Length: 409
Image 1 (spheres, one colour):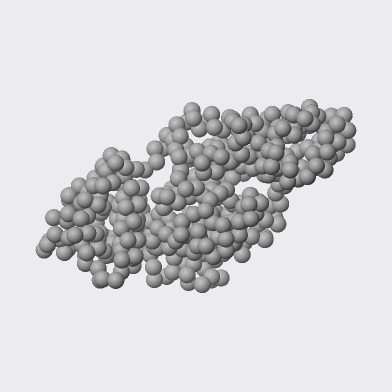
Image 2: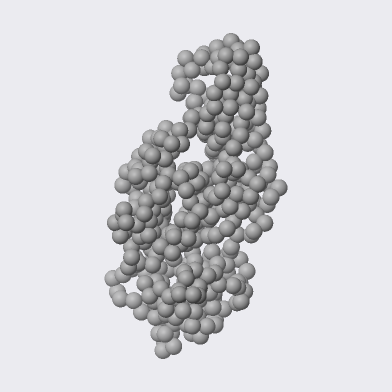
């Protein structure tokens, strides 16, 4: 009996109910006139078969994987164990591998764990991601990366709400997350956008079928002194199907087939949120989170239109006011009180939450009019919790054309 793999898979039973044996297998690449099954879905079915002690079925499934993707290293490791288990018990996953490959084996074990976990504990379609609270009408799709589970989620915008469309196995930086400096091999956590697309013929083979640069460092990263650049979503080398869960220099990496598929829906400006762990909420809780932020923005807008400088400035964190200097607050007071009337319209609203609920990002179209001036601005506010209230810690006008051109490198 394949004791090690059975124990390994059984340890994941807490993740959720056992998957149904007849779960549909996602279709992937087109081969002539037929679609091939997704190797990722087949490897998940292999692990599930092992977990259910159906070892002959597991061997058939893993053979299907290898036939489709001969470069899928985890599939070869599992097949070797399945074959060797017919002769003798195995002490651990990867017992047939050569000595001296401890790190590679550890990476493959972690990959197997995360793949099975995602297969057993798939998101409930009735739940909504806490990190994406509102999508503007112009945002057709949004990306959300869960770095702890090695998953990348694609959402479609349905009347301002994110609806899950696809999810993919994901590789992140080999030193984890919380990027702070150039060369630290960490993946950033935050709210970003896709800034461009780089085709295969413009890249080294390392990046596979293409790359989508993202807008790290954003304004908040820069304000915190976070360094580094060139964080991309990209593919794998031509001789590699996928990489270990933590194997990049900080970029986010998909298999080449997955990158090609998701590339259909990405464009400059597509929201790209990266978090340590996605929290899925019941609709009522999700709406409550969104409404709290919407109410805050409505109060900020109302105090602006009421030309009430004292209440208006209370919407800003003390750290922001101190950083702007005394002259900024005085200029705001003058700008409010020397107008006869002010009207502010906020539209095309995007709302996101950072990991940990401590910070939110609101991006919107701001149309301002008064008896002395009218203008239109795309604006981004970063807000943090302060004594139970949201306060603005950073406010920036967004120049999309400059941002896309400057960061897509």
